[in-house]
Length: 260
Image 1 (tube, rainbow, N blue to C red):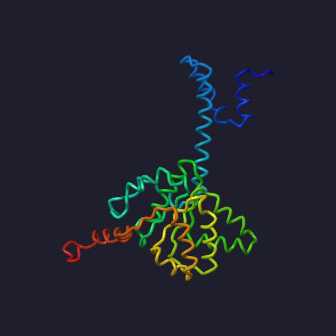
Image 2: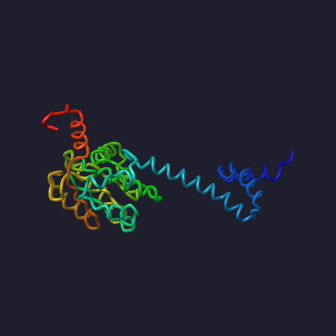
Image 3: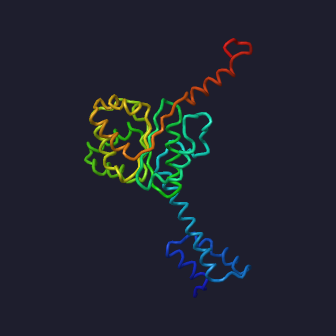
């Protein structure tokens, strides 16, 4: 039996790998008939469905591959709780302008003040605007490279960390870093220098980085590359988690307790 024009059109769309457009075809045909829509407008609307579906799928893939610990967004951050953070500057960074010249962003401060959350917020914004992002802790990055070296996959792993537009390196300084791991981190930072942005969080000020690596030369070389084009946040204040615990403890104390 000979196919109708409608069936042929659906077959063509499916053959060309446009399943969303094929699925939307009957609805768009009915809409075009009811509103006397011309061929050009009809075709644009049908293909827009495919474009939007493709963009959604790509966004979901980027978000999954970013490896975020939690999918925080700008609206989740309470700037009133951390007055030391320049809210205007954070909002400016969320627009992604810093990516054009591979500017780095460093969040420095004690545990619990929102460094990881801010790093993920910037990473999520980059994903939303079409960029590849990858999140890792400093310890996991070093462990992965160490394993890759043993398996003969060193070059491939370094390329992996060099590929994203934004590489988030979290929790630098929380654990001591042997000389071998420090050299690995330097390699990653050095190869990304001028090519892609690094968002880095650390609990130690830059003057103390020699303590992290037990090697002031490597520390100085890393800082030279990270700070050349950078935005640095020095965050002060109490831990969110500690304040939450203290508030909960106050609620649980009996009335009349002199400590409340």
